[in-house]
Image (cartoon, rainbow, N blue to C red; front, top):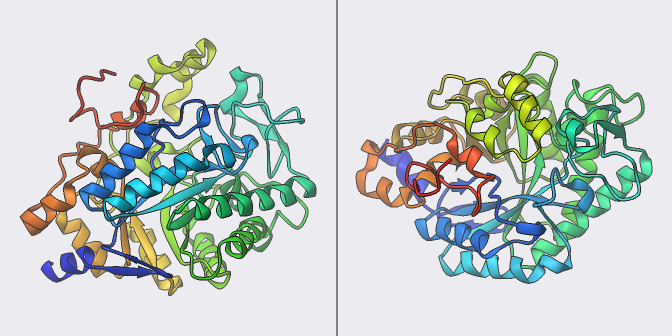
Length: 403
């Protein structure tokens, strides 16, 4: 165990980047971009993660265009946020850490009315449950011009964050956002070259990867968050996910952050533990949406038993399928689990809730060794806190901000 923890806490290479350790703060939406502009809270948040010792901290949901946002107070990559991005990167570097931007597009899953078109668009026409009470109840199907424009937007966003001093990029291909919508057999009903077989469903994600790689160069680290499973029978499963990972490896991806679940249907497949729904309902500003969450939200947010390393069985299958570095995520809250993930052959560990609970946990791990255990209770109140003033926090150690 001590050897595995030593390996975890020692330096590691990711493409052309040397990280001080193998711990990654995974992307958890911060809620710290009022009006779509990264605020000082966001800078302090990620600088704090670096100060606590993580090797790489990930800025969550950096939209590649205004059409790619699920709601208004999300950041999208354009010249108006460049100076703040530079400040964020400099603040993280000053604390000895590295920083990644998670590039994302929501597809049809949005409450926003896009520019010049009547509805948000994804792979296929569908009911947009997220926007039913916000004037966008339907999602449309992207045409070839939409697809080409979106690929170009990913490339432009990648260039911007690289020029702002970021050290890596994570392309969001999971959780039911645009690229995940194309990959999922449940959400992609197209009958052209972008639908049907997995090879066709992977066409857009691979085009995005190629465009981003061309924009940032061969040594710049590119990761992708990819579902091991969508969490329901009709969706992406582990067999297709492993094949998708093989194509991404061939396409020049540097690492996969293994995840799971669809935010629109199976959110708790990712989180596990107690449902945050009772705390989320009062924070919803739209009265009709609030009523719908009250009556129907339990289907998407049921409490699910938490266990350590809950994605391990599927992650092992991906480990056998590819040679590229893999980032294990899902149920890592003890030194024992960290050591086991390292022993299973994963290259990095991604953590979310445990680091929100204690950004200095790596210092505690170094002090306590195999006895370390996170104080996180997996209550998931941090999920609800995204909607509070000041953004995401662990409510166990910041009780002044009551839910």
